[in-house]
Image: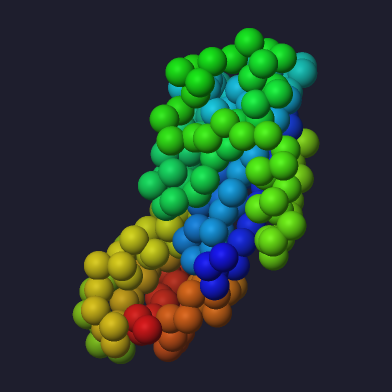
Length: 136
Length: 75
């Protein structure tokens, strides 16, 4: 185990807010010098897809483009920009293998560089982590 | 304060100032001073926190009107 602090994050939802939070925390964690691992499960798995544009939840969904435009105007990076930044900063992304099977998602649907793992792999990292966050 | 390099992150909101700072300081030599110009009100707390975790030395934070100037010496 390296001497770096370790942060693990679990993401189980795919709405825009639940998509942005882990990306902001993961990029910031990596910039703080921590080793960051993010596990995407259930609906969260969609956030690892190459083609994904997270939407606001429920009745707010039609306002997604307004929110994205507001974020752009305020110079807040969008989901894809942050996801790219995270990977460049060395954040590790994991796709839940069971969810992939359940939802019929193929490895080639997901961004390059993510790993397909099960709960044991993730918990093995989590048990030796300094902080665990659940976003769901 | 004399800086070896200036990074202007005004107009950027959290987490971009910290990410841009990390990338900028990686290009510098130990002992060099980086000046950061920020406008995110969170910067006054975020940069000391970043320095605490990364080990770089926070030299000074100066507020000049709308600009927050942060000076960091690379470890």
